[in-house]
Length: 233
Image (cartoon, rainbow, N blue to C red; front, side, top):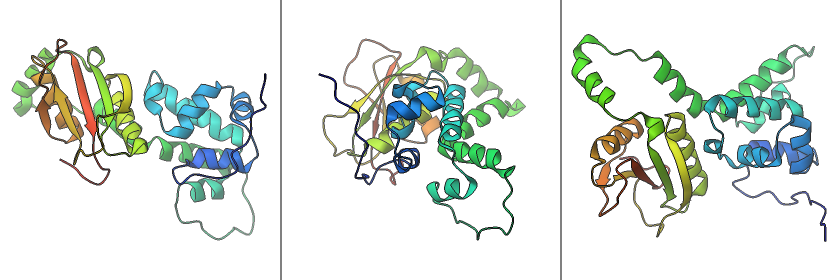
């Protein structure tokens, strides 16, 4: 029996800015997806912060721009949703600011992903780092490495953010889920036998500690267990 979609009546503490904007407009996920020419699944990925589900960071950015545009988010609303100071209303509204506001809002949603992407594209090896560059070149490309990201603190939103961060570095996210417990004190990268070099590389990129796994048969499969948000290695 078909059941009509119901709008969320109560906002959860972890509800994203995009989800709040959609609910404010009294739209279901399906209706919003149709307006943005996205799939309902893509809309849920955006609203839940699961950017790692998109095949590339560029696709995630494009989807965010399409969604924000479809919802008609104005300049002041974009600032409010992003938690930024909202200036007094101008005496004369300028409709030309709308597209810039939407773009700025999308950039805020994907700031971490884009910062990583730009850093990778603009970085150049120096002459003094030739040995390190040669070592890095000998390692498998990030896209050849599978990464499992597990929630070790109970904060699924932060876990998804880390997963999106890892994907933006070029790695293949194969699973995001719960760890065996929520008692992990900090985020760490775990590598299997034979995978120490790639484990150390990812740990350095995330600025977290690295640990060996007690076993494993795939030297190109890493595990990232995410600890509390405000605790770094």
